[in-house]
Every structure is written in structure tokens, then in C-alpha cells.
Length: 150
Length: 428
Image: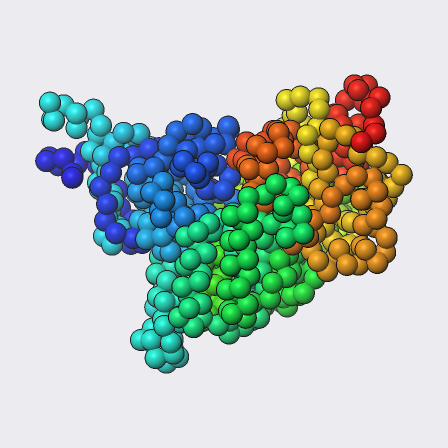
């Protein structure tokens, strides 16, 4: 569910892949690869140098810089989605073919090249509506959202 | 996207259910990246290992084969997660062995060649200049684009499977001439001499230029070496693998060396570089030094990411000749069945096995359920001469250390990094 008030920000880009989803953001300034960065059993960041080390991405909208590393993430997104340890969606500053190929296979929403910059605009905990067909991401601030529900 | 009559027939299912499913997914990817049409490919290199696929991926492959998927073009396979001859002895879980057997059975029905090598370009598939291919494993792609002048995007496992079934890929990215032009100038004031040195240069540059859509252009400018670099193909294998791993890059140019960069002007297509970087003297040493051991003991030493060529195997045999690996250290060499057969014939295998190393074929260490191996054998500090492997295993709970081949062999024999510590016990 989206909050019952206008969004605090709206980001736009060309159409992405996957269904429309609503969920909570987890933001990284680093890149992402399921093979390089994750304990895939649990969907937790296991690369010690990653800025989300120890954090879970399960059921969250991962907002991050770019696609890292090799080709393995493609199969891994399907595996994680099947075991319910996948992110809800991924928003990249810039993605690569591997991530999109994997997102299509797994039915995972994915967008990139959003304006304004998603990493500067979105904060961890914000509520997001990701609409790949429209190429939009609407943002509700976490703090403000909790005030309205009080 | 603009479709040919044949592609329309695929999409409506008239050519079977498998091409319909495959083309549908390819269309979604093509539209995402603004592709205008498809381009036929000459070959496919497909990565389908149990560690990445797990049950869900293997099932999706089996479903595709069950609805009649067959490879329309030559399709070779990337390394698997187990060497069937060593898996039990290494304590790999039977579950992964079974998954690999199911993958093998499905690939046989698909008509793919189970060569299980990540250096298809050194062993079986020499892509030609200008040829469109659909290769996966980033090391193979950056080789195809940069060294051969062939054309490929990163085609990850599912995408390579779809390309095998339809015989084509969406035309975007590195299939288009404009994407192949340089974007970043890298002036190198260093003189890499070995495979690991080239890996270190790729590691350093990949950390700075880490975006699939960027193409670094290397110009060597070292007064001490006015003739410029003279790398062996194996050196460029390490260079490309490191650039692709650290930078997720699919293409580079070296002016005067790679086929689409006879001159600086050709490499940039007359455009100006968006960035201008310098690799200062001493950078290679500093790059090695970014990998520091947490302990003096070496748990495991791995050679062969990407899989060893015959020359690399020979060089390691020379380094290991007459030596003995320390009792507390495990040493693995990973290569292809083809190179192993030659190494057997030439006596290299016996030399490294006599020294206490284990030779594995059809695999690559980081694909070999590396986290489970670490837990089972107590591996934490991993030493390697591959910059790429040092990058990847950090995500699997290892303390990776990247050094030259000579240092790796010496430390394997000592069982330790430092010269002075515990050099007494060398028997097994």
C-alpha cells in the first residue's frame, strides 16, 4: 500500500522490466552482484567491504550504483525469488545486460538511469512505488510516513 | 523491435514452444536497452553451473528442454561446480553433484558441448573479427570484443540459453559500432611483465572504470620500455578477466595492440576521452599490496582463474618441480580436460601432483561451492595469482591475497607468507 498523501519525490526513466511493486528502500552507494556480495542462503550482504555488509535485502527495493562483476547474478535472482530471499525490486544508477536478463527470468522489477539520481534522492526506509511499465518511482519519506500513521 | 518473418513465427509459437519462450524474454531485454532488431550469432558460450542455478535454475533449464529446446548454433559450456572425479573427496555436497548431473543430461538434449571451460577462446572457439557471438562468462566476452574484434554483450546463463535456442540476440551494446569506441584514456607508466602483473593492472583500472558501458583505452608510455608492452595471449587473458571482474567491463583497447585500436584516433573514433587517467610508476606493487593476509599461515593456494592454459601449466610445473607443498596448505590447479590431457602427456601433471598439488578439470574455484569448501576445510586465507579470483572469493567469506605465481608457489611450500616462520615441518 502506498501512503494516502502525495509522494515526496518522483523519479523518471525509460520503461523497465517486471511488475509494479510497493515496498521499502535499502540504499547503497556501492555496486551489486549476487555472487560477489551476498550470502544467498539468507539474502544478506556477506562481502565485508560492502556498505550494506550484514544487512538483508529480502523483500526490499535495493537502490544501488551499478551492476558489478560477472554473469552469475542472472541465475541467482531466480533461485532467490523461488526461495523468497530475493529483493522486491532493484533500482540501479546504471545496470548491465546480466542484471536485466536475470530480472526478466525471475520476474523481478528493474529500472535504471532514473532522474533525479536515486542514490541522492532515496533514503533507506523510504516507501517506494516502483512502476516499470511507466518508468517511474514514487518516494514517500520514512519519517513523514510514520507521522501520518500515528 | 523490428522482427523478421522468422522471428514473428517464433513469437507466435509456430516454430515451437521453446523458441517462443526464448524470444519473448530476449524481446524484454532488447526493449529495455532500446534494441531496434535482432542479430544472428555464430556461436554461444553458456554458463550453467549448479552453484549459481540451484534447484530453480536447473528446473527452468529442464523445462525449456522438455518443451523441445535445441541449440541452433554451436554452443559450448562454461565450468561446472564439481569435478566429478574429485567432488566426494573434497567433501562437496551430493546435492550439487546431482544438480550437475541433471544439467549435463539437459545440455545433452539441448545439443550443447559440455567442454566446461572458461577459456573456450583458447581451446575451441576462435571468434573471428567482426563476428557476432553470444558469449557468457565475462572473461570470454571481453576477450571476444577486445582481442578478437568479435561482438558480444555479457550474455548471462539464461540469455545465452535463449540465444542458443533462437540463434540470435537483441542488437544493442557491443553489437553496435558506436558502443565499441573508447570513452576513457588510461596512460600507463608501468611495465607489466607477467600474467599476474597484467591482472594487477586490470584490477587497478577496473576499480577506477567500473561501468559496463565504459571502454578504457590503454596507452603505454614508459620511457624505460619504449618498444611498448609485448604481452603473451595468456597475459591478456588475465588482464581482460580482471577488467571484467573489477570493472564489469566488456571491452578495452590497447593502442597498437588490439585490432580496433591501431591508433589512438581509431580507438576513440575521433571523439575526445571523457576521462583521462594515469597509472603511475609503482601502481602494480601498490595494487598487490591492497590484498593483505590476516594471518601468516596460508590455508589454500589456487591457480587457474581463468582455467590454466598449457603454457601456464608448464610454468607452474617448473616452479613446483622438486618442491613439496606444506602439510597445512592445500593447492589446487584448475584447468580444462583438453589442457589436462596435454599436461598428462607432457609430464606436467605428474610434477605438480608429486609436489602435493591437486589438479581439477572442468571447474573454476569460485564456482565450486566456495563457501561450503571454506566451512568444511577451515579455509580462510586464500592465496592466488589471479586478480579475478581474489576479487570474487571475498564475497564467500575468504581473506584473499593476490601475488605473483612465484610468490604463490613459494608460500605454498612454506605454508606461510613470511620466510622465517615455521619452515621446519615440510613433510605430509
